[in-house]
Length: 278
Image: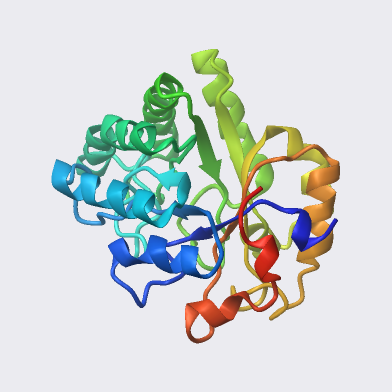
């Protein structure tokens, strides 16, 4: 058990960002990783030119890296935005324009998990109206994900860093998962369990794992405080990942932390032979 028994992937939107996007898959491969994930890489547009999609696909394939997670369009991330599904007007329209683009790209590279960030509360808009819009958009996204054999992920963030984001507890995230599954009947909506965000919300991580491992479709980690690499903070990440595995979670664990200096040197906590996803 322990770190050597996990299936890790590298989040190329937070690690290797010192490199251009198309060079990051090769950098991850050079560090020993075979699986990667991404936030939506085209912050400005939900519908990039086909040539840009093709270039990313080629970069992933040339590096021999498997994309295992992709965010739908989420606004300016990193930045002030936290998703688009519940934000009325132009952002919701952009999300809808992106749904099939993201799903088709995922299908083209064999990616089986698509993450839809809920979006911040909008000033002057009734939260109930936002929640209704979110459910409507998530149902469409779940169906698109299902069409390409993928799951739809719903993520909980943390209140200190995302004060306007409404899903800041595991139960809140799982409640949305359940509503989407109830509405579609597909059962392909799953919880994205991010141990860093949950820890920042002061949740009991062992209890969350015990309650929600069966509804979890993807896991992400970073240490707390500071969102650094495992071992830089106080979280017993190795123990928590063991607990997840014992609870039946067999998916990927995304490394979504901030490297203190050069990204490649931030993996010292993980033996080189444990980096390729089994």
